[in-house]
Image (cartoon, rainbow, N blue to C red; front, side, top):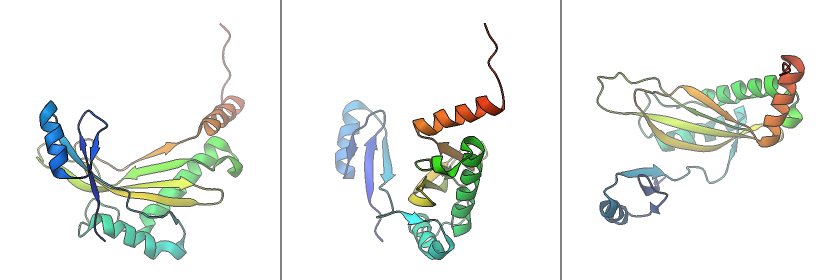
Length: 177
């Protein structure tokens, strides 16, 4: 599978298809250039054991030969789905509210300050559909002293309101004044 890149000029939203175009644009304003991978998946893959091989192929397409500090196995994707499902359960209480949440994680840990290069890592993005998590994006990432290894969970506005309602009902009250 051939990787497709887009090129972006730092500090702008301008995206270019060719290296020559982006260098010309960056030179005009004295900015840096970033190379970004296009989304790697043509269509989402349901996170379930039956699709383990498809998920591992998607990971391999992004990672190439890299295995250290990257996600290479189905279990990594499944674990993110399980952690996210548990967190949503604690926040929202009922599965009927789960649809629409998005989970993202980047592999790896912090890079030592005296290490002069960034490490190659993998970012995976899952979307919660009505009954399961789906892998919607896998992309190359690079980590530095801030590292990877953390999860981010994104809620819809309705989910946010539901989480606040559950929190207020069960855990605290607002003091007057």
